[in-house]
Image (cartoon, rainbow, N blue to C red; front, side, top):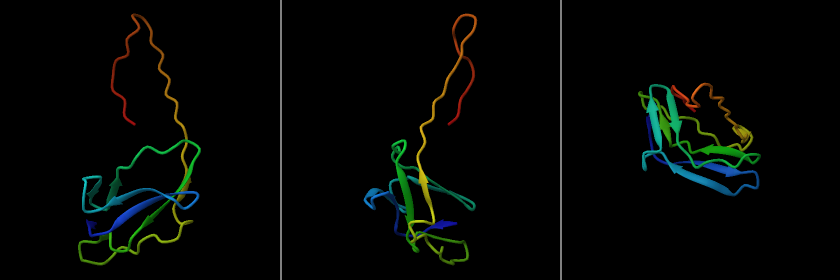
Length: 100
């Protein structure tokens, strides 16, 4: 995959734009092979969103355009709240690494 031009749009359930992310700017879209990672604003837990992607946003290395996502129901989800709990023993310190 390679970036083209255009925007990934995250919409809320009411159809209001939550965030517009240009694929060719700001450094919020990273491509590694066939994986596209999009960095976005934090979602509100319990809120429903859908993602729209312009047909011009991505193409394969041969130049074939990505079909895009224009149907609101194609990629729709409700954000969940995550709670992380740690239990310390001994001297009360936590060692190690965490990844989210």
